[in-house]
Image 1 (cartoon, rainbow, N blue to C red):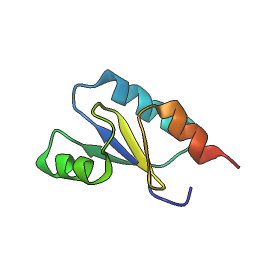
Image 2: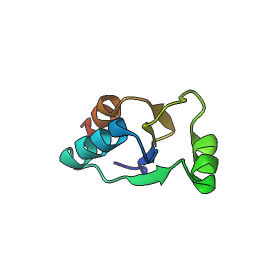
Image 3: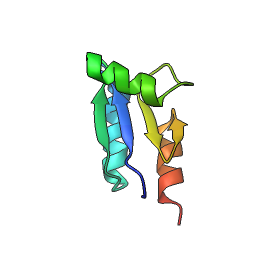
Image 4: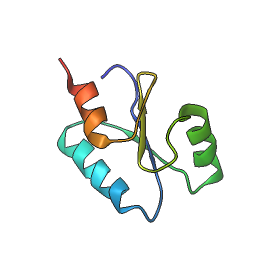
Length: 77
């Protein structure tokens, strides 16, 4: 993976927990950003424009709303 993977999450988000487990199982390092904080909301606004739910993912100038899509994109050969 060339670029840092950002994972935007919220405290009470079961899908976020599931997504992080899948990323760890796939061996993909990531930086978690909690959008329940002011700083996290600012990062979310800076990187994500088309997604309004969590988890949301950002890597290589692309936005992803599904963990499976980001795993497929970042583990391609």
